[in-house]
Length: 124
Image 1 (cartoon, helix red, strand yellow):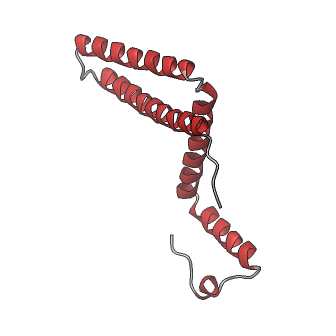
Image 2 (spheres, one colour; image 1 turned 90 degrees about the horizontal axis):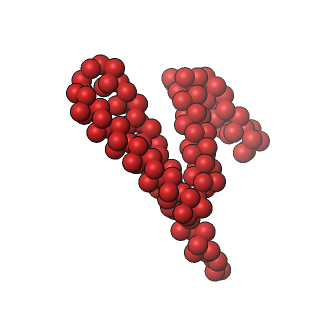
């Protein structure tokens, strides 16, 4: 069985993923910079350089997205990653719901409760 891969689509998807990850890192850098500015741990010169660097990075990312027609791809990747992060956070904040979902999935896959679930309690 052969797999047909559209090389252009693969390149666009990979570049979109890289740009999305760099944007996420940029968001984190901006939040960290704001915290440091609020705490007064940066000089005026450092604040100026940091602002210029973050602005230049933003411009470069926008140019890459426009030049390679990646706006939709990057948006889609970020939206997907946001959903995954939201689900992970929800599962950590609501472990009971996580256990119930796992139990439900086990029942749906086999039609009955697995013996391992019947013989032990779930730990948190």
